[in-house]
Image (tube, rainbow, N blue to C red):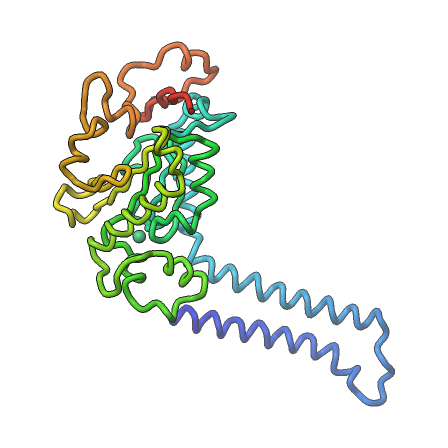
Length: 310
Ligand SMILES: [Zn+2]
């Protein structure tokens, strides 16, 4: 509040001094016995007004930006520089000209849900769609793009513990803005239950919608629709940060899901191959040597080859 008051006062001072400067020029012209202003004089006044307003706006932006965005911009730029340092040309090589992601993923926009929880190197690997409440219908075109154009064999819908969108949808959100109301209207859960049951119900609803939308792909076996809850609070008692798979192509029975082939870890087909890139322990062969400037040593593996798309 104090900052706002200071800014408001500063603005008032700027505006006042601007008006005074303008008035000093305009005042003589207001005298009844003065001849009308020439076009040149009017233009001069306009320029002064413009300049004063521009200076005021610039000063205001500078003051407001200082606290709100400057620090985060510096952090983002620094993080990006670090990313460039630790990811050499080999990292980008597999997807320079095209992308072949293995999964279309819909998550909530919530800042506590991110790809590093499920993929150590999501670049070129996950086609990401984010919106409040991890919904199909509010991002339908993007979902279609992933399934129909990129032909990802997996459509993964991820809800999460303590979801604000679920909380809002389970309550009275009539006072929200039109755009927010519209994105909450499509979350079909009972009023008064903002917890895990509604979070799961929403994920299951999304899986059902996806299966209906991509019926042909699911029936032909080209697409698996999976629903999961990312539980960073351990509400489901499966470990903090666990991605709990609760729905596979409409199957919600936990025992049946656990028995599915895709849930088994076998030496021949490690799940790491699907959900995580291997950590580089052995130097990658030929491809990396062809780089003029090999990347600096880092914990990041060269991305695995992508499976051919359908
Ligand atoms: Zn959420």
